[in-house]
Image (tube, rainbow over all chains, first blue to last red; front, side):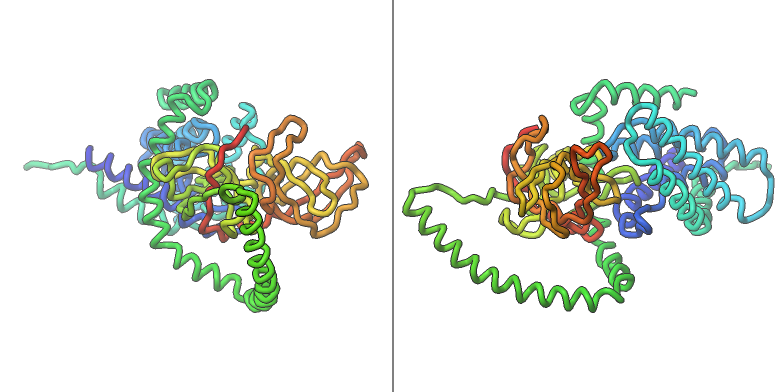
Length: 169
Length: 273
């Protein structure tokens, strides 16, 4: 259990560091990937809705505390996104290797749209609609490109830290 | 359901707590913890990023080189003239018994991280309260003197060894500006990844393109000047008359290239607002 918590914590801290440093230099057309969305979606796809929600909450809360803006909205978004993506994976049993990529693209788009809507309703979103749509489309595309690279890595870490059952004869 | 409830509670607490609430304190603690890691990652990855960035900009580098060579020659002449004027100023200050200098003390800092989301227009620097930085201090780049400085933003959060700087691109950021030739003042607000916008300028002012825009300390429509006067904000890029015809809307291109921002200076002066 401790090993699993430490593994997830290491994934989240690494994603936060990369998002705030390296990915800032990888900005294309004024938009960068949303790495914590990818982490939440991939873990949810691998582990199901409950763990997806927990990892989404941790990712969102960590990002919120480093934001100069309002706090809590990313945590709410990623918690619901993690749960929803885990549920989708439960019902969609396609063996296609493109499934995680598709879910990452759709999940990122839905998640960002939800974030923008909640922030707007709370009076905390002051971007024009054109920029909001641009971020949704481009960040979803970038996350879809990143997923085939990150999915095997995250699956390895996730499966490696799972509790092993000991079978005695 | 529990996690959703906690998220909603955090949103409410943050909304009610403001900048001094428990969540703001927790945010500063998180910043304090992650800043050394961000600094380490940036130190390792920046040369690699610069290399790929250089490759991407290769076609424009020759033009940039020619332009900068011409600019260096021009500036060399200006520096020669300025050094004479500076000596003259020092002599006059001595004669009049004036103390100190017109340029405020500053702290040099390295940019170690940027805002973590696509909706966050801020950077983190590697200097904090231990180095004398306080919330509200102006941040510039380009040179240690006000006449060579270009406006970056202002400090909005400070921990012991790092600070968060709100960029002038942020839509919540406003600065009073003055057009260099006409002396007309206006309010310049951030527009995200678009150019800055200068409002409240009287129609028919006769604005040139590209005309430099500097900070001013005058109060404009209730917004007090947060910065010392004379810092270059940017240059006028486009002028469009507003439909109400009682003011002109001006697009101002920032002087700073924020995608290449690596080093800044924090001006250690008291600020208002």
